[in-house]
Length: 117
Image (cartoon, rainbow, N blue to C red; front, side, top):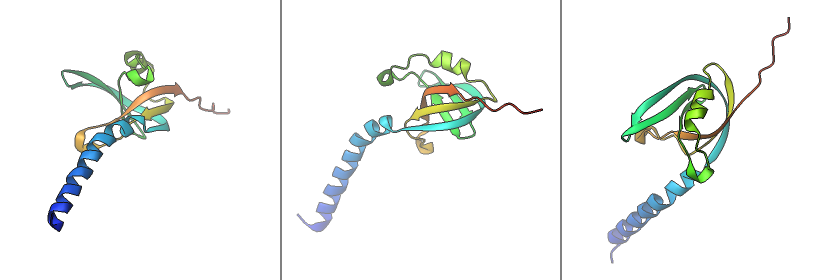
């Protein structure tokens, strides 16, 4: 096997490994944000719809996540009020090329200090 053939073979193997290893890693990559909700929407997606939440920290999707036992996306979307700040735990990656967004797993309101008179 010559050098060019070896490089091609190793390149194909590396791409195959990345294709298999990336989705599980992406799913378990979880981060926490303190974010203010700017607006919400429901967009057509794969024959259904996808809830999206636009914040000062970026755009998130809000879908059920069976692995994390999250089955209340519609209720959560209703509780995420525009203008309020939330502690958001989200998994996944934001990859604009593929229109991928991090998924909200939990969202808890953050109390803001009241203004003193």
